[in-house]
Structure formats: C-alpha cells, structure tokens
Image 1: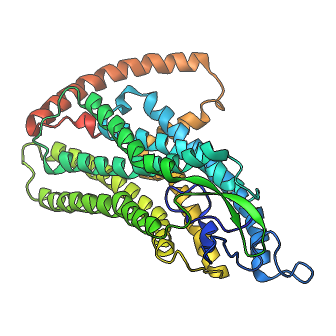
Image 2: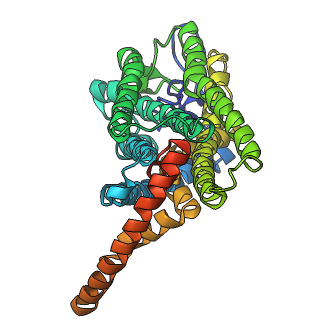
Image 3: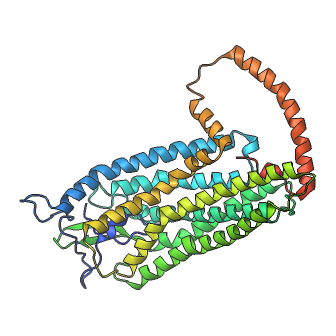
Length: 405
C-alpha cells in the first residue's frame, strides 16, 4: 500500500501514518519515502529497515486492530447490558456513560475495520460514499466522547458543589434529551468532513498511480491549517479547559466538606460525599484516558498541517504516527475496563453478565434464594426509603442519582 495519503486527523479515514508524505511538487504528485511505495527501491537487494518495518506493520497492525475491536465490543456491549438490565442503573451519570459506549461502538464497528484495511489494500476500496461517511463518523464519535465527558463533569460539579439544587423528578428524562442533543451537535459539526472529503487519484515518486481518500483539496495548504486548529480547539483544548474549571471547584468543595459536615447527620453525609467523590473520580479517569489517547493524534495532525509541503520519511516518524493512531482507537475500548476497576458494583454486575451463560442452572437453589432475597429486600427497601428521604431533606439532592455505579 502506498503510504502517501493526505494528512489524517481525529476524523481521518486513512491511517495517520499515511501522512508520511505530502505534496512535493507543483503538479500535485506525492513523493513516497524510499521503501514505502509500491515499487520500492532495493527490490533486488536486501530489504531496507523501512521495508522490514513496513512488512511488520502489515502483519502486526491488522491483528492489533482486531484485538482492539474484540476487546472494545466485549466491554462496551457488556456495559450497555449491565445498565439496561437494571432499573437502578438508569441514572444521570450512567445515561451519559451509556452514550459514551454507543459512540465507541460506532467507531469500533465502522472506522477501525476501514483503517485496518488500509494496511492490506493498495487503493481506497470504499468509494466516494465511504470517503464521505467514514471521516464524519469518526469525528462524530470523538465529539460524542469529549462533549459527554464535559456534560458528566458538569453533572458532578452540580452534585458536589451545588447539592442544594433539588433534582427534578424527570432528571433522567432530561438527561436523555441532553445526550441526544450532544449526538445531534456532534453530527452537525462533522458535516464539513463529509462535504470536503473526496477520493483523489495520486501519482507517487515512482510514477505509481493509486486512489486515496483525502479530507480537503489537495492543493490548498491553508485549509488543513484552519482545520487542524479548529479540531484542536473544539475537540480537545476548550472541553478540557471547561472540565478543568469544573474539577477545580469540585476539589475545593471536597476539601472544605471534610470540616463542614453537620454533626447530626455526619455519618450519612460522609457516606453520600464518598459516593459523589467516587463518581467524580471515575469521570476524571475517563477524561484523563481521553486526553492521553487523543493528544498525540492532535499534536501530529497540527504538525503535519503546518508542514504540508514537507515530508518526513524517517522510520521514527512512522512509528510515532502508528502509536498515535492505535492509541486513539484504544480510547474506544478502555472506559468499560476503567469502570470495572473503579466501581465494585459495576464489577460485580459485569462479571455476572460474562458468567451467566457458563453457570449451571439450579432451579431449587435459585427458588430458595429468590424467596429469601425477597424477604431481605423488603426490609432493605424500607430502610432505603427512610435514608433517601432523610438525605433529600438534608441537602435537597437525591442520592439515587449518585449511588448508581
């Protein structure tokens, strides 16, 4: 496969390492690095380091992409089953986390297979429609992730910093509307990707012709610069700045809360504050994982966009871009497993979902357990009602919205 596609950013359809080449002359042809084109130099002699690296890439990367898909599908589908199967899990934070999982599944099922195919195919195989849709789908998934994380941070801010704001009875329904609005906004922001992406016929330095999906006019150097700056601001810097402000106030409030708990309800208030702190920690871990996984791609895309007429054929640059691309896709499979290690409740239900088909059926024991559980649950529910009522009167915030993970 000729490694001479256009620059790939967070919404790119082609692999990030496709940008190892750039426009090198006035007629729009692209110079491929030695050893990376279809008619690589040294074919009659021993393979160069880049030829060996390219062979390793073609063997290893598709397998790695397959692993990312399998792990991501397993984690996100199980997460959705856990949340959908329990009415107690249908809370404000969990609705947002479920929306994150749906966005990750969308990317795993569409963009990851297409990206993996670019290591095996010489030309763009998915036509003009695929060239329009794939970049838009990936950017939509990135938008859903970062905007949902911002909304989750705002929800934690409200729960911890402003607990006196009474939750309305339709808070879950209102959260569903917010999640849908995030999807609509993400789709609208990705429309330019579909508008400008096009299939181009490219000639490399060895006069080998191939087709590639590029995301902007190939002779326009200003467009990628504007695009990369806007992508960096809208999908990384601005959301992370807002999230940082939210968490600054959350940290201040949590530090003060250790000294300002009401004495009469101190144990109950401490328990509720611990729950809110745990949820805030989970959201912060999600944000950190997103930043770590996507920052290298954003930085490389910015670098390439402002050096659009230059080429970096080095093996090191290719390795860095490959790592950045794999990291960006890994973000779509890490959230369920981060939640698994941070939430004991989710871990228990996750394990039960995975093992439910492996456990032997025991009708008599199950019947006994169900009858015993029903008696115990009656007592637990009565105590829970009293606790909920007391805590709601105390601070005006329903703890059911927090104790869901």
